[in-house]
Structures are given as structure tokens and as C-alpha cells.
Amino acid sequence: MGLPSEAISALVKYLDINYTDFEGWLQLADLYLDELTYAQAAFCMEEVLMLQPQNHIFHLKYAEILYTQDNFQLALKQFCRVVELCRDHVRGLYGIKMCASRLLKAAPSKDAAAATSHEDLEAMDLLATERLIALYGAPGAAAESSKVAATKWIEIQ
Image 1: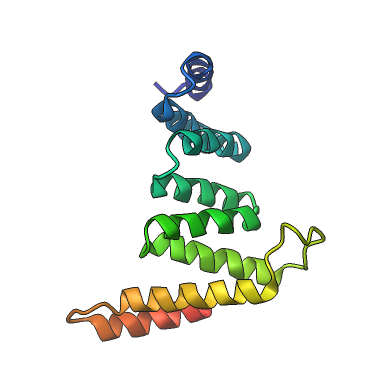
Image 2: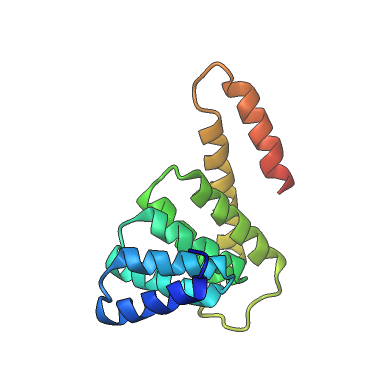
């Protein structure tokens, strides 16, 4: 009805009582995303993941929210979880590549326990690149031209 703040308030009240309704949490996350309140949307997706931990789409949505918030370390972990749950997930692989690239360009983290090593990031970036190129080079009539185009595009990223 075009009243997002009222819808958010109603869903918050509903979820205070029915906190195991993952679809309600998803709807609330979408409303928060429409309002560009990413921290609240991330919290909602954390609730969804506690209720539905095996759904790779929910991990992907959470990873993309984290990436938007510049939380590349945690986004990388979530993108890796997406690929763990769905091996050839293109958006998951590209997310790994984007996060690894951003973390490699960033200054070294002061929290050594939480930071991924430079070598591990390079290996993840290389593996994601290889898997993306392999996916785009799958058998078919236009396989070679698709593979060449995908390789060029991935290399400039």
C-alpha cells in the first residue's frame, strides 16, 4: 500500500511473537533493503539463516548485503558458503572473486586472527576465476566465444 514504515512496524510486532517465521524475516529484510537500512536487513537475514541454514540463496542474499556494507571479510565467508552448498553458483563464485580482490587491495588487517592471509586470498581469487571460466566454457555451439568473452571480462575486474 506504499506505507513501508507501517509495514515494518507491523512485521516487527508480528516477529516478536512468531520469531520462527523465516518468510516474515525475509519480508522484513526486503522492506529494510527498500529503505536502504542495510544493518537491519543483515540482522533479518541472520535470523533467516538460523532458521534455514541449508538454503544457498539466503546465504547469497546475506553475503550481498554484507558486501554492500563493505564487510568484505564476512561477505567472503558467506560467498564461500554459497559455493559450498551449490558448487557451480556463478554469483557465489563472482562474489568470492570480488571480495578477494577488495581484500587484496585493502591495507592489512590489524586483527590477524580474523583476517585471511594474502596467499589464501590470491588462491581463492584464482580458483574462483578458473571455475567461472570453466562454467562459461561448458559444451555448446557458442562455448568458445563465450569462454573468450568471459575470460576477458573476468580479467579486467
